[in-house]
Length: 228
Image (cartoon, one colour):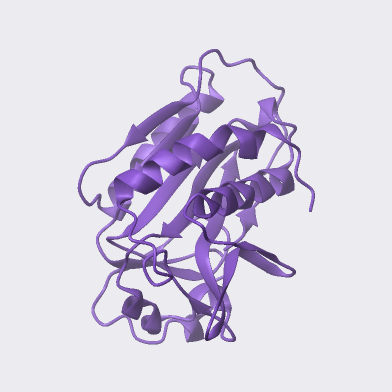
């Protein structure tokens, strides 16, 4: 999953107020999430709404990013497949996966998409470290990776889009999902490595526990300029 860069540069406009956090109850249909994100991003770009972090779970589904290849959709097993405006390729979303839709105004944050993606990765690395999991980046592979007995595996995916210098989409952290659904795709176009979750790594964290960790690690992750 990768970033789709903004189409044009706009002058920065100050936006009052702290970042708004919202946790969606239940399983939110994917089209509803996209519609709400687009409304929020338009309001942020117009200076009428604060930045927002929106924590969501979806029913089981696949999404295809702007670089998705048809051959990487192996067998959806009846699950819906949505074309997404985010960067990247195919991924799965579903119960037990915490999605954080991150709507931030990059006019206030350096106009740097690469730094933003790096901060998202740093956020996920710090979050899983809260539960004793050592994760990191890998050259040439977007997302956050861990070592497992079977080899390297992705625990958090990153895929964003930027419109009028405001970000859409964000990150997906595997907490306790049914990992068998990943067999229907080549996740993010990477065949050589698998996917994992906190539970698969022996961490019995609840979604409430993970949400608390996300809140605690957010500000430090985005406070520093990240170019590694």
